Every structure is written in C-alpha cells, then in structure tokens.
Length: 212
Image 1 (tube, helix red, strand yellow):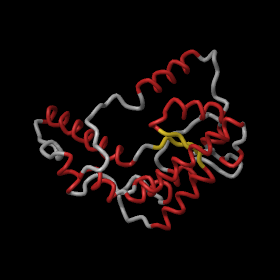
Image 2 (cartoon, helix red, strand yellow):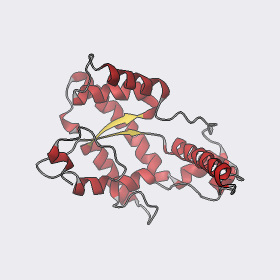
Image 3 (cartoon, rainbow, N blue to C red):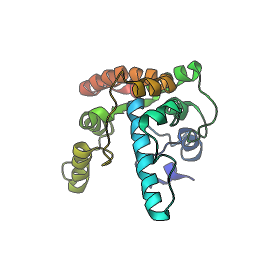
Image 4 (cartoon, rainbow, N blue to C red):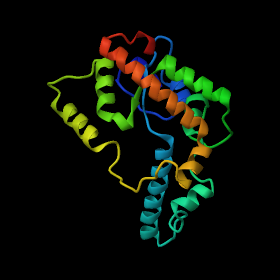
C-alpha cells in the first residue's frame, strides 16, 4: 500500500499489528509502536455493556430481540462469553481480530518482549499523563495548534468513550470469572504497569532510546 513511504499519514491506528507490519511499513520506512493499555477486566465489562447497547438499538430498529438483551453480566461471565487474552493475541498472532486458536505462556513471553523492546506504553487509567508522554517522545505538542490542543483536552477530560456503565468490583464473582478467562492478559497488563513507570521516568530524563 506504500502508506509509510508516501508520507501521507503521520499516525496510523490499527488492531492488526502483523498485517500493518507487512502491508504498510518496510525496512526503509519503519514505524514506531505506541499503545494505550486498559485493564483487561474493565475491557470485558465495557464490551458486555457495549454489546447490550448495540443489541437494544438493533431491537428497536428491527423489532428483533438481541443476544445479550435478556442476560445479566453475571450470566455473560458464567457462559464464558466475551474475549479471551485478546491483548496477547493481538501482539503475537496474525489475524488477531478473530477469536481462533489459543495463546500460551510462550506467547505471553513474546508479548512482554515486544512491549519492552518495541512499544511506548500509555494507560487509559492515566490518560493525561500518557498523552503528555507521547507528546514529549514524538515531539507532537505545539501550543499554536489550537484545534489539536482542544481535541487533546477533550480526550483527557472525557476519555475514549462517552458510554458509561456500572463497574465490577475486584474480587467479585464476575471479576474472578473474567480474570480466569484473561489470565495471560492480566499478567501482561501487570508487566505493562511496571514498564510504563520505567518509561515515564526515562521520558522525564530525556532518555528513551531503549523504547524505540
């Protein structure tokens, strides 16, 4: 596709890491990987309520009941619905948007290595701090870019989504069920929390060569 060599895009957002590496970049035009990480269990909870909302809209539009309209989040978790170790899968498997095949502890170690060597980490739980880190690392901040700064302010204040829903308490049955299904993702997330702090300190000191 020659997207990188064309210089038409400064930033590309994708969930398909392997496909992007092979289709968008080349050895002369490499990319720099950065990501915003979210607690995997919070991701699963949000996914349930998002699906429920979409199904309700479909029901109202087509007069047809949706799959998730008549079940609680407890039933959803007990039935093993949702995703399983999606983050590890996305970092280590081709066709990562599909729930096919399992991931192993070897995949987890590969994912950790990729985060450590190739990724600049941000956290949705620390959005403002993460955006400042991205700005400093990539040299993006421009006080004269009024529209960009307005967009940044809105993102910090309101987050990535305006969809609100009940939270799940750590240690609850639902939390434990989601944790069991996403055990490797949770381990990777804990690893990323430590890596985030390490990178943040390097950014503040102006030394981030190891994250490139």
